[in-house]
Length: 201
Image (tube, rainbow, N blue to C red; front, side, top):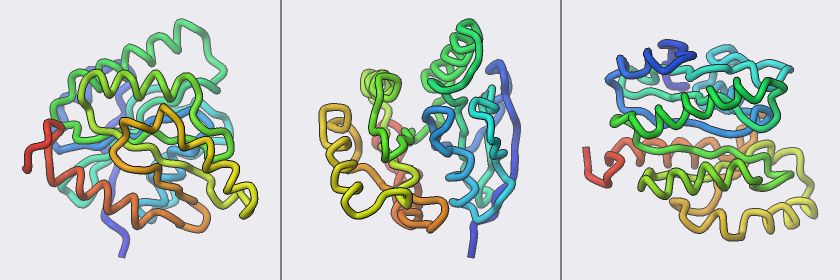
């Protein structure tokens, strides 16, 4: 049975999310990595998070209540979106303000297309989180697009330095086949059993 989920709010400037008292996990990644599709697959809904053919349409932080007990934060995508530099800088300030300021944040999931591996932006985000002792984990998306031989090559992209500080090996997922969703849910629920400082709660 799919978990109950509903849209809470969309915050384009950073003055809305502090009102949400629920513990949270956040999902970050490039604009074309499939964040919205992943969120929809996790809760078994096709339209909870908006899926667009134009990368970069999420231009703020979207928060969704799940099971009435916690929340998912969909952070604005980066890298691929065709927007101005000033707008990208405003997104950066919005995201960093949330990551720095949200005391209810338990974990961040950095999404990466398994076919391309981590890029500079993903590594910068991982360094940002590590410097603040914020737990995070890598999630590979679109795993169904690889054949067996391609998968072996792709796994090599996930074995270097950027993955060292993550809380476990990357979780490979597919929104189409639902592969890896059970493991991701297990990790999410474990994140809500401790706070961002490692204490149970």
